[in-house]
Length: 169
Image (cartoon, rainbow, N blue to C red; front, side, top):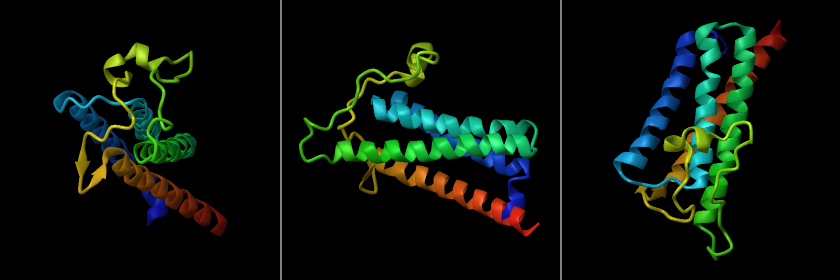
C-alpha cells in the first residue's frame, strides 16, 4: 500500500501542503508574534522549503524520474534540517552560552544569496540562544527536531518500501 502511495499525486500534495503550512506558521511567528528568526531558524526554514520544492516535480508529472529527483531533495533537506535543528538545540542548552553561538549573516552560496533576494523571509535578526516561545515545555527548535525526524523517517520508510518492492520483481 505505502509503495503505491508515492505514485499518487495526493501524497505529494500532502507533503507540499504540510511544508507550506509550516512556512506560513513561521511567517506568522515572525510577523504576527514578532519573534525574530535567528540564523539557525533561517536554515531550518530553508530546509522546509527544500522539502516543499521536492514535492513539486511529482505534482506536475508523476513518473519515476520526477520521483527520483523528489526523493533526493526530500532526503537531503529533511536530514539536513534535522541536523541543523539538533545543533540549534545544542546552542540553546549549552552550559556556557558564550561559547555556543551562531553566525550573524546567513552562509548561503554566492550564486543564491536568499537573504538578499528575499530578506522578508530569509534575513536573520534573532539570537540563536534565545528561547522566546515554548509549547508543552519544548522550544521551537525542539519541535523542529520532531518535525524533521518525522519527515526523515517518512522518507526512509518510503524509500525502503520502494526498494523492497523493486527487489521482489
